[in-house]
Image (cartoon, rainbow, N blue to C red):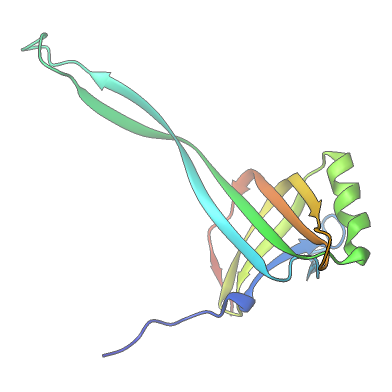
Length: 145
């Protein structure tokens, strides 16, 4: 029996373009323990009546109305990354990001920072988390050469 081709969670990387149109992407140390990407569809629904039996229930249909992706990341707060995320939060701008599945390949799209949280308890280290939402076309997964 052959097992699946697996990926260590540490190899799931979120990278950010260093400058617009530079094509250079780097990971931020702030995202160091948890990361993920979720793909969602907005579904428009309606009901088609049965014209032969108007009193009978109709049949529901569904159409994909829109596609979006949400990226999340968290970890021990890296002080050096605060200016990057704070500036992005205040700008309202989109940034090009990539989500890599190890060296296998990646998704790439423009995105907006929708949440930047910094938390901490009395003991321990401060933690941070980010939520990033796609802004426009989500390019299909590209297998690395």
